[in-house]
Length: 441
Ligand code: SF4
Ligand code: SF4
Picture 1 (tube, helix red, strand yellow):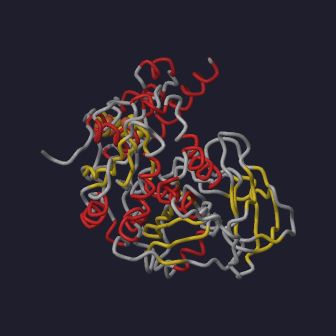
Picture 2 (cartoon, protein in one colour; picture 1 turned 60 degrees about the horizontal axis):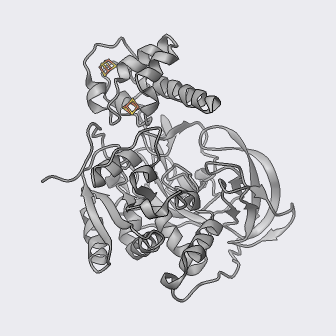
Picture 3 (cartoon, protein in one colour; picture 1 turned 135 degrees about the horizontal axis):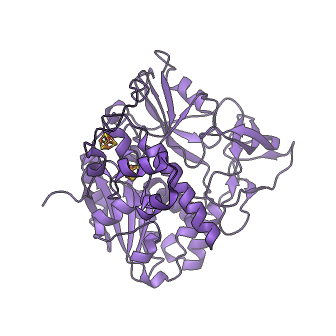
């Protein structure tokens, strides 16, 4: 039997060899640090510091504003310069942000480490995770404590650690698995212990044999946790695709993974949950890949949140040639940016700088009815038809053809020989349908 997978998907150029063998390097920022108050799904955090106040690493600077929100902590020591200054983020929107001037001392608050984190009660573990400010670090930004609070915890059967890292060029999860596999196993053990009937699955794509070997060696001695090897195919790390590949269960846009007894969590989120529960460390840093053929020395950095990407590009040797395109995130689901002076936030995993913009190279032409977009769509949709309906602004027909099931993966765009902007059109339709459904409630 082959490795586990889903129907559809594509095999884009991987580009991972640029950084996968380079150890994570710690980066100490030089300039000011910028913390958008909204770096998660839900209500923006509320500042709890004052301008001119001196803060240390690990100090709370913005509190969660309700259950669906997440706190933010200082990642350097220094002086608060602003509380709600509009700053550009990775999707080219100005968002209110706290700004801290780095004092380059890197002093931090005392963390409340516990001797045996596995003896803590469910409430104690959840309190430490909620306090840490961890969110879906693969890009979703969903507050982790909310994800771990399903209505019926006894119905959760699988906690799936998403270690697929299917986006081309990204290698931060790859390096974390090689350099800190204990945190992954321990984090998953803690999460599984929150649910009476849960089993842990670590899903790794088969293009990472050294990670599979290392994580398997550690997981083999642990009860109730197994490693499952999934096929290397984009978007294998998508929540619905991973659930289907590892459990055979199906989720659609009207359901949550918990409706089929599953919770999927990103590798980096799980590792940081272990650090939060065991060492009392809030989320202050993340691993970021700076890569692409326009970068002199592509690599992975361990970065304080709030660091400007332009500093990281410099730390990676700068541009060897002027990039034609800069993407925050991976090439399939990332966002094109025109400025590298944007901060690293909890959900940003990479900056990709390429010398050729593959999309801009070609003019979009008429559909030739080749059917390739239908073959690759992991949501089993008819992208060519959905895009046509959007050209006519026929939202009712778009909804009737299940357009809301699109996961905006970009596979149809990638494969289309006519270079039609299918994902963008379908994304607009999907967001209109979802907004309409919310208004009907
Ligand atoms: S229609 Fe949506 S889910 Fe299907 S391939 Fe295109 S972007 Fe992906
Ligand atoms: S892949 Fe492009 S050209 Fe082929 S059917 Fe789909 S939209 Fe038309």
